[in-house]
Amino acid sequence: MSEKLLTAHDMELLTCAGIYVEPQALNGPALVFPISDGEGGEIRVLWQGGAYESATYTDSRKNQLVFPYLELYDLLFEAACPVHSVLMLGAGGCSYPRYLVAHHPEISCDALELDPKIASLACNYFFVDEVIRESNGRLQVQVADGVEYIKSLAASHNKRYDAILNDCFSGEVPPADMMTSEWMRQVAHCLTPGGRYLTNVVSAQVGEEAHQLEALMDAARTVFEQVEIVPLDPETDPTEPDNLMLVCQRA
Image 1: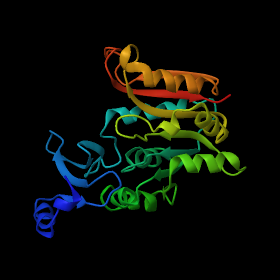
Image 2 (image 1 turned 180 degrees about the horizontal axis):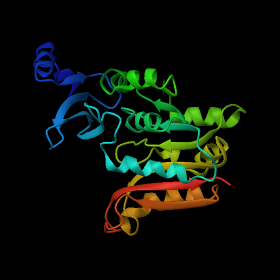
Image 3 (image 1 turned 45 degrees about the vertical axis):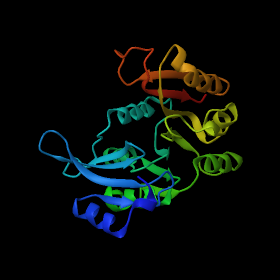
Image 4 (image 1 turned 180 degrees about the vertical axis):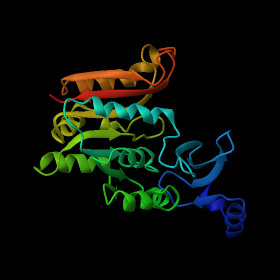
């Protein structure tokens, strides 16, 4: 869908159909619309570039996770230190940050989103403003470039996080700046001792389609004491791409 093709009449028709369109999002038009959960309930989704980017239930389950891969971020609780402060990069509709602060009153979460239009959609359509109020500000959403934020924080002696979570993608791969040893070093500087860095990766575990995962792990191993890959589904063919979580722990 091209922004140039969206006339005022098109926007009106989409709105009447229950579809909100943000034509000026950085990666192309973003659509918000409801779908069925298959059990009589409703899921509101953020669709962009041919894929669902975020989703939320609209009933009493609104702070539950829709996408199973997000549950892998709970591996942060296996860190060697108590978890009180979390940074989320590539927050999108803030599905995991909302879930995190709603279910863990001891945790505060800073959620970073590069695109101000997507951050606005998160607040207006994905209950982020509501959760910020209900959590007394333990969830904070910032419009910022994750690479620049980490670079600046690593160079300072300011806040450190017990866990840093990354769900940033450029197309179907992590941004190139987030796959280097220098990036891993900066992330480690932003963690408390024993803290964890978790990043979502869509990749095969072995074989020809695992080269980006291998590069990411090589970079992580130059910095972190512990590095492991956790698949969403252990039964998946390891030569086929799937959601994986790269889990790194600082000494």
